[in-house]
Image (cartoon, rainbow, N blue to C red; front, side, top):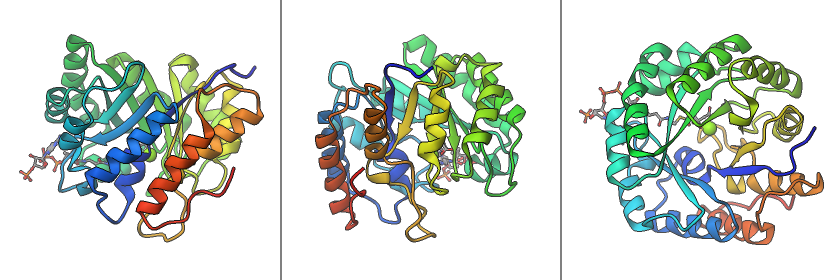
Length: 292
Ligand code: HMG
Ligand code: MG
């Protein structure tokens, strides 16, 4: 049965803008985040405390957090942290939610964080301890849940294993990332079924990149299996800089429109969301997402 309500997690300022070939000015990020809040999005991933040499697009996150100030009542700003150092910086910047990120594929893990899956999970232990001690919400990501750009197919059991470890670390929510948009509703359902044996579906989120154009079909299928949190990116930000025209994360506008048609509440004002999309598309010199 479908959920009555879906919580949307807006990842555009982080996952979208980290993939832009240009470094978006902090001022523009602030304008985008303000418009997303105005649109009723109450979970917004705003940046990352990672190595600025690895992801220069996120290097302004400490300054961005300072200028954002505390999140408005009822709103959560999330940030990615890969290790203790990132956590300490995030905590100093006043973060109330941090996300650790692991992968279900060894090669992707090496390329993304220069560590094996096991070593990356070890780095998260002090993050989890620090977060628990400070009452900071911990989110966890698993990448490559429906395919890896280097290894191809990924076994559902490998995803379930990493998701189970993140849950054991204390992640309140685990986001399952179809990093390269390789999934289909069928492969997604098999993966979610395997993960649900380790982690209750209420703790799961879906994080679809829309490279294959099947993200909405995957989301719709999984909502029927107890998943009720969906990550999305305003204006479908996040296209690969090396593949012009390639779609990025599934567009928040498209997910919100689909859920509305399905009679599922999101709390999002679609007019204002469209305005946020036009704002960032304009700033990037892009066409906004087509009307959903
Ligand atoms: P490393 O080179 O193995 O680690 O990188 P290191 O400890 O040797 O550090 C290298 C340099 O980074 C040093 O600086 C450190 O001080 C610095 P240097 O001495 O060379 O000047 N450093 C840091 N700086 C700032 N903040 C930190 C930090 N830690 C070390 N926290 C590391 C390992 C994890 C740091 C690196 O690989 C990294 O930053 N990777 C980030 C990759 C990333 O952000 N990827 C994108 C996010 S994941 C994603 O998008 C997927 C997702 O959307 C879900 C999906 O779609 O699947 C979440
Ligand atoms: Mg992503």
